[in-house]
Length: 159
Image (cartoon, rainbow, N blue to C red; front, side, top):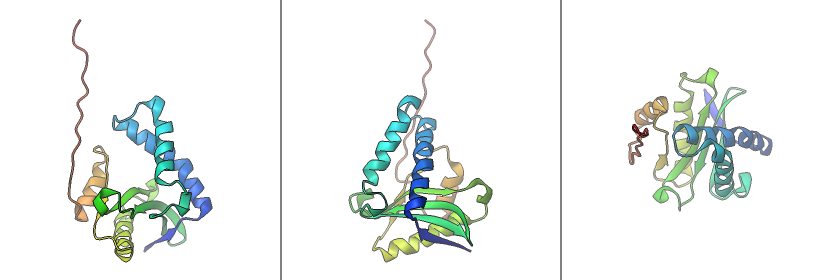
């Protein structure tokens, strides 16, 4: 059985050290940012969303635990300016050795309960197109596709 607990300041610093480069890498992989700009853009995004760290209004960052073991993290925003008033899940991560064991699903269900307690009537999230495992999980949990961005890489033709 998993549980969620609010991040401590030490856990938050560890989160930023890992999350900022991970998000930069994901944006590069998705074709949104160049490798040269990605790390700085990721830092700025995190600073903009969490200007006061854990004390940022309407931001709830949790550690996912399986017993006494930290196995992941999840971040919920209940900022009424985000996602048309829906709560927004900015991050869900489960460490590799703990994947495919139902932990992400349990964490999402617990987060839904927390969102209701916080007065949120719906949840939204973004998932990178290449992340088919996450997309399957979200669909299983009842999330519906609301937007699709598409990209085609063009190669230069013969000169």
